[in-house]
Image 1 (cartoon, rainbow, N blue to C red):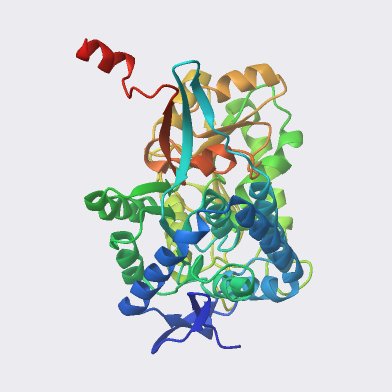
Image 2 (tube, rainbow, N blue to C red):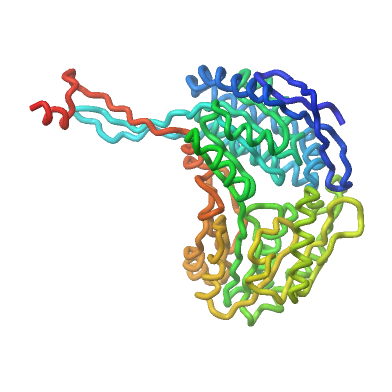
Length: 481
């Protein structure tokens, strides 16, 4: 595996220390990533602060750079996608789609406007609301979609006029480091700096005096630490955290018709999506039919090394997450659940777990109440609709959820009762750069994507231009008079 370097000030930067990156399909280290020092982080922050002075002043240049980035990403699919598969585990086709999505995010934001809002325009004054960039953004990304979620931050932050110091997850640093390398020829030095390291580096970034905003995607536990680190300096934060998304099937649904959507919404990316379906509530009258339909799909889907053609699911990304999924499934089985499909790790090297559908359990079991973030889906029966909505909402989570039924107006009414940032009807995981995405309650602060996500990377400035020369406002005139 080729050497990897960090990007600071538009240059390749080597480090004294490195750390191993594991291929989850083999559970073996296959590459070394650079370990950023405290001094190198200071250099990255300083480089971003210096670049900010000019970067913020030319919107036309920023838009063209985003278009150029999109072109680089599309031209580099054959280089980036296999690297992502090697460190993350997802099938190569999914890795290609992730790179394509990253390019799409850049194209979208390159053309997105965040216009001034005129509040007053008369003989006395013109008053407008203007969005100004914040400065240096510290961006920290997770291991499930390391490149695409990086561009959820890069594209709007750069368009708004900010500069970035980015840290990928230590489980999947290589593809982001490679993106930093590819973009050295596209962006002015210091506009995008990419550093890599463990949790200590993340703590340094979130408390660093130079950064004015932290954009973090990850776990609730770490998100709370990020918020605490940001508080003393009053840094702005956007936190996209965990989810325990419910899917509610209504009594007028056709089990055969919704099974594919439910299964895809739960098992896409091997269940390693913050907004994936994590629990399914089904009316008693169709419970067995839904369980059987989901189980048959779980048994039929092909699982294996992402580099091998035909595999639809890869391994769980890392050893701690593999252990967590194994523990939660074992706990459910110990509490009386039945594995309608799967139920255990696969007998092969790597972090492979059988696609699992669990029946015969209810709220109060850990895999229902907590976020499993893996290929294991609990299916829970219900009798009363009002009660199941209350159960669906009865957690600290509030990222997203979905409702499935033939009467779409009724389903939409139920979906509107979900305490979640996104409520879908007869679909799940329908996302795009134009749709705002964020969570209620412990699932996050702020939103990403669309003009709302772009605004998160700005401060609002009221620009008041008096038409006269007296300098007296109506209020000050009254005071003086």
